[in-house]
Every structure is written in C-alpha cells, then in structure tokens.
Length: 380
Ligand SMILES: [Zn+2]
Image (cartoon, rainbow, N blue to C red):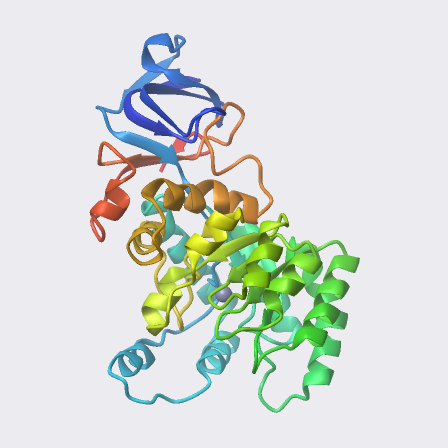
C-alpha cells in the first residue's frame, strides 16, 4: 500500500542538494520513503493525503533522554527557581524511588513519556539507564528501555552511589554490571564531571564498553571546563553531550572529528545556567545535535520544539540549523542513516506541522503545532 502526501507547502530534508523543496509531495511505501520531489511530478499511488500547504519535516530524533525512573522533583525545581537552597543529591532521590518501583511502574513511565514525545513529533528516542546503580537495577533499566525505545545507552557511570568507594564502583561498572547490561544496549556513557567521574575513570569505563562492542558517548563539560569533550573525540564517541563549557581547543577538536556536539538547552533553561556557544561550534564546522535530556531533575521537558525555539532565541542558531540539529543532527549522534531525513529509503517518520514553515517552531514557541505524525509509515 503506497500513500502520497501531496500539496506540501514546504518539505524538509528530502533532497540531497537542498534542504527545502516547495510545492512538494512525498510517497510512502511499506514504511519507507519511496519518492520525494515536486508535487506535479509525483507518481501514482494507492492513497492520497492532502497536506493543504502545510510544512512537512522528518520526525524529530531525540538522541538524549533519561526515561527509566520513578517519581518527580517539582519541589526541587520550584526551590531552585526561587533561589532557595534545596536538599542536595537530586539524582540520589530519583535512584531511591526508581529502585523501589516495580518493573511495570517503570515500563508505564517510559511508555507515557515516549507517547508524550510522539504527540510532539518525536519519532526516534534514545534512553539511558543510570538511576539503578546496582547490577540488577541497571540490567532492569536497559532491558525495559530496549522494549520501548529505538536506542539504549548503558549509563551505570551516572554517579557513584552513596557509601560506595569510587574505585570499587568503577570495577563494578566495568565488570559484572557491564556484562549484564551490554546485551541490551548499543552505547556506553559516562557522566564525566567534577563530583562524578574523572578523566582516568572515564577512559577506563569507555575502554571496557568498547571492548565488548558498545559505542562510546559522553556527558561532557556540563557544569564547568574539563576533559570530557577531548576524551569523547579521543574515543571517536558518537557524541559529546551538553558541551556548555568548551575551550577553543575543545571546539577545534570536535570540529575535526566525527563526534557530534549534542546541545541540551532545556537543561540550561531549567537550571538557569548559561547556554552553550552553538555558534562557535557551527562556525568551526562541528556537527551539532539538539536533544531534550528529558529527566526528572535538570530538565523535565520532552519537547523537541521547545529545544528548537531555545536554540534559535538563546543560542543564535537559525531556524534551519536548529531543525536540522533536531533531526539529522540527532540521527548522526546515534550513528543512524535511516532516520532524521526523508530522502528515498529513509524510515517514513514524518511530521506535518499545523503551519506553512519550519520557522514557526521557533516563531510560535509553546504553541502545539503538530498536525499529524507518521512513524514507519503509520499515522499515530
Ligand atoms: Zn543526560
């Protein structure tokens, strides 16, 4: 069964030589994009869907989220926004609640958030573990994530659990925990930051993951300058995520590598921190992705459209740069060639906006602009 979406005012990400095609059509067949081009030249199909002049984009690729958790931390957010000090150890509060939750509770939470994302146009989701921090709990987190999302990352090295010796914990992460989690994950991640894991520990954990076939990615340079971005490049990581505090050398290293700089501006918004310097990265030639970092502590938003609006307003990206970072950038950060674009052969993950142009995502922030979403060719 083939379907043509015709009368598209603006079709993004469907041609090799230009990002936008006006007055376009898109043919979907068997869950894949079969053809894209000018509406007048579209081939005959079984079904036709009239876009009414609206904009059509690839579905968003959210390449960084923490969805396997229980409980929320609204009070902590309110305290932070009013400048009051709040109880320390936010991640540890979520760890305690997550450990106490049943498999079905965790599954229901992931399903709820993935549904929330889909209704906002996100059709590819990455999800990390990291709120379990024991062999059994981390294995459970990656296993549940693997049932419900496209890409899974093992993040046993999120924080050192309370009362545990850091060296002992690194031995656990690189030993039995890695062995239990690797079958369910494609990536390995480390929170490389002062107070979490240092350069030496990060290298040890990434090396162990790579040795069993996992692809490195890194939480890097979120809270201050540090070695994270450099280590990400050294390990040919798929992405260095956050990149809020980068030196000129870090920017040059990322630009000279295939490691994507994944920016998470919802975190800076929700923690009232300075935004990363997207312009420096883009102008140097680095690949940039945008993602939500959806998690109950530092950014409880699942909206890629919100990230696009922040990237344009606060990080001086053009609307085209921001939407491309939220689609093809995310795909590159996940080393996926089949999503993030709508060229023939792509998975038919299609976002139709209730607007004539992708610019409206930044121009009309906070407004629900999703008219219709197809995932693998099926309308949601
Ligand atoms: Zn994160």
